[in-house]
Every structure is written in structure tokens, then in C-alpha cells.
Length: 306
Image: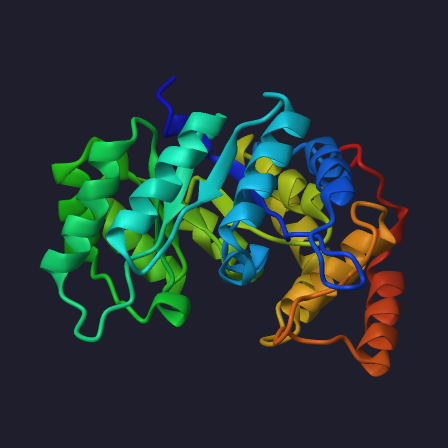
């Protein structure tokens, strides 16, 4: 099995835990790793947008990478976000992650005053020349400000075998997934955006999803049912939990909600989000409690859903 083929299924994008005073919570890095592995996911991704990577110092990044990889201990593969506006910094971060044992890296296009295909292509090829692991091309214009066309992504994959995994988060995602796979069938495409369109993304050919969610085992159950041919069962599980998926995916509050759930489940000690991140108000917490009770999700443990 090739390295990129292993990137199907569910890859949980994890938050970075902080203590109530805002400092990095190294103890929670270990409990978080055990928690995520216990949910049955196929892999985990650290230092993404929802990992508050832009709010970490270089030293803190190194601590997160080292602590998570040590705690995971090879039980599941770990993808490390290495996005940076400067190509040399992205390359340095990629090298550090791979040296520490990362299975793959996730790289967004650089933010440019005048985005152009040539500059973005050079950015990816520099990373590809520096490391010998799959590069997850993060297609998320909302955070990068860069719109990558189907034609560009297909050409990137054709020119570099290391750039053949795409985390596609350019809505509407289902039609773009279908067009991209038609143009470059060798690609592995993972959905994202909180899994709101997961069923449709799978239906258009996505190999799984790379996203955060407070109950990753729900997504595992959906994707495994779908992969086994039980599309009706996968859709039933998705529909049952959709109110929670939708609620957690609120713009400006999604990370705060996810951290609150992770803290509630014992994965991390506190739900602290570094400023200027969103703060969960009492009304939202009450609404979350109502939804959790309505969908019955509190019955879940770290075991697979029966």
C-alpha cells in the first residue's frame, strides 16, 4: 500500500490544548493523543488551522510535534501542518516534522499579495524536494486567500507524486471533488469543513475526511459503513448526528465548541482558546447540552459505535 493510500478514512484534526492561563498544556497533549487513538480514527492531524498553529511560537510547535508523536507511538499515522507564508519557513517546518516521525505534512498555498499559479507551484515543489513523505495540499481559500482551480491541482499532482493528496475545502465541495477526480483519478481526496457535506463528498469519490469533530468515532462509523457498501446505514448515522455536526460547525465558535466537548470528555484539561479566538457563552453551552441529549451522543465511549 502506498503512503498516500493510507490517507483514506477519517483523519481527526486535533486542537492544541492550553492551560487556563493560556500556556501550552503539555500534559493534555498526551491525554489528547490517547483519546484520539481510542476513537478508532485512521490518522490524526496536528497544527492545522483549528490547531491554532498561527498562535504558537516555534518552540511550542516543536513541543506539540514531539509530544504528540511520542504519545501516539506509531499506533496511527500523524500528519503535521507546516503551512507558512514564507517558503523557506514552510520547508524548515516540514523537515522538522518529518525528522520527528510525521507520516505526512499538510501544506496550504502561501498568502500572496498577487496570488499566481507559478508562485504557488514553486512553494509546493520546494517542500516536495525537501521531504520524502506525502504532502496534503490544503485547498481552503477561506484561510489562505488562494483559490486553486481543478486544472492547477491536477497539474500539480501530475508534476509531483508527493502532491497527490488534497484536503478539499473549497465549497461547494462535492462537485469540485468529482471534477478533480475526473481530471486526476490518481488523486486521494479528503473532505473537511467539519464534515457537514460528508455523505455527498463520499458519494462524489472522496476517500474520507480530514476534519475536527468532538465525537470522531461518529465519523469513523459513517465512513466505515460507507466503505463496506452500507450506504443506507452510513447515511442514517450521519442524519442522526447532523444537528451536532451543524452546531459545532458555527463560524467563529467551532473551535471553542470542540474544545469544550474534548474537555468534557476528558481529552484535555481545559477548553481555553487563545485570543482572539471565540469564547463560548453560557447560552451556547446550554444549546449544546440540549443537542447532545437530543442525539443521544453522550452514551458514546472511545470504543467504536455498535
